[in-house]
Image (cartoon, rainbow over the protein chains, first blue to last red):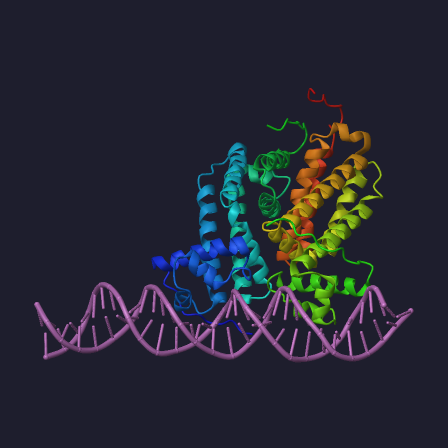
Length: 214
Length: 214
DNA sequence: CATGTTGGACTGGCCGGCCAGTCCTAATTC
DNA sequence: GAATTAGGACTGGCCGGCCAGTCCAACATG
């Protein structure tokens, strides 16, 4: 099955945005197959046929929403990491920024899971997902390099590998936030994780110091 | 909606097992709503009506499969952690065991995602999922305590908190294994993670450290 | 005879998709 | 400046099809 080519969607149209928001809400709540187009139309307070006017199919709606959503998330992360200045403290502070971003968007994680699942069967979704993941990776790596400045060279882990580790860990935290309503307990685990990172950031362990977690 | 009470299912029946395996395969491939009962029946090479003979409904099938599957996973993890003997090296080796378990069952992760999603809407699924997560947490904590023996007291992180951190991280690795077909790259990230853990495990290299006040 | 299994007919409902047609606004024409 | 045209936005209703679930007659097997 080759990649279908869809007509471009007018994203400036306010109703289109309402539909996209409704789809995000419904798919987050009930999953892609679990939510019907009627459900989405009702949520957007719009006739079901209008969905097919703006979007060729349910799949097309998913693809467009994925594009919009990943763009939004990437922009949010970029915004939060833009104020980082070089020092270990601010580098760890940047981690807090990322944490806040995750918590703020925690209810949308089920949609992300849905996109991941769809990426198994849809090449367009797959391609965009990989690009998005690569972008997040770059943002993390740049965040590390910027945040540590000249210190970056003395890491026990080179920035790209630290970034990869961060990305995995952050996915884990996202997932557990989705599972576990107790944010504070998870926050403590995140602080523990930050402590671990701090250990790895400290320069060559000639005189190792041990810190109590804050 | 109160919890429905289902007639017990004869799990010794071989055909029932075939159906459960088929459901696992189909739901892993297409998701809960995405796979029809006919599809599952075909996969199990069984008449569709037989599904309704053994299980009251699609939901019932999900609940039973979740029970069987989580029991299997827990048993597998328990088996892999049973040989741990006290020392830092074997404690890290136990991590490798868990890694192998994750890699071995990576293709079933989409089903786990499906269960997580279902837990949002189904109290029976939710309850069992929480029990399962709690069991995994205990296994990890016991693995840490057993693996480190008397060393456990000298951790910079008490075992329960290390276990929580491990659980989050392992979820992250599971997720990325699902996203990323490149196991070896992720394996290196996992090794980096192990190094980080090792840093937290190592007591002060030469002179014994003063413990934090109780 | 109980349990397990098949295969098919059947239903009521929801699904995604499609279409004919309305409404509104803005440009175009006379 | 009234009439006409064009086209985007939007609707209600319909369609064929698949879905979960029901029922049953038949048959195996011990």
